[in-house]
Length: 217
Image (cartoon, rainbow, N blue to C red; front, side, top):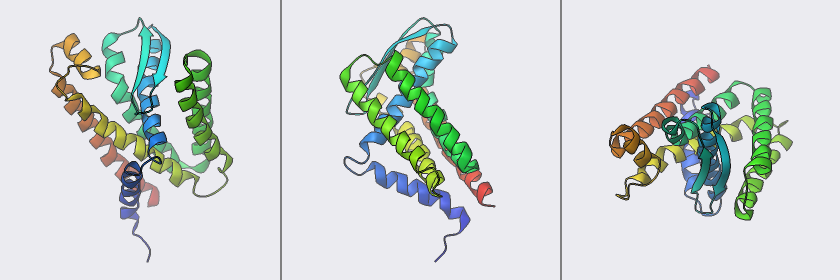
């Protein structure tokens, strides 16, 4: 039985949710969201006049980007915000055309390679980034197949779902992380920043569902 176009997006969304519940299989995608989170901190530092000292990724999906200079406000804001943008961008570009998806994959490959060359300082992070690089290479290798776009769309949703849920872990009463940093800078409570990130991620998912429907139309 054919699935109606309006349900295609939510089928992919359900697929992404199921993948995130699978032991081992979900781990690289959590690493990917963590990488996008940390590289967003770093790129924001560069764009606001600072620099990246190093990027660290950990097996549990946590990460750390050490920066020097730049705008502390925007650097703190764009960790979760950047992950939402990356997830949305992956899904949107994959929805347009297979060649666009391929070009984006090549650019992502270059970003991962640059991270290894300039910002990775430990073997554990090197291993994780190499795994991510291998995943992108595999997608490029099979780019001639029609399912490349679907794979990238699901990948974008995996990043988005992770970026939707990750800020909630800040509500642990320990006052650590990006929300606490923003609270110190602005005197706006951490819970407000968590609510903003969560709401923006929800809105991004809603908008992408509309994009997917238009692409099918």
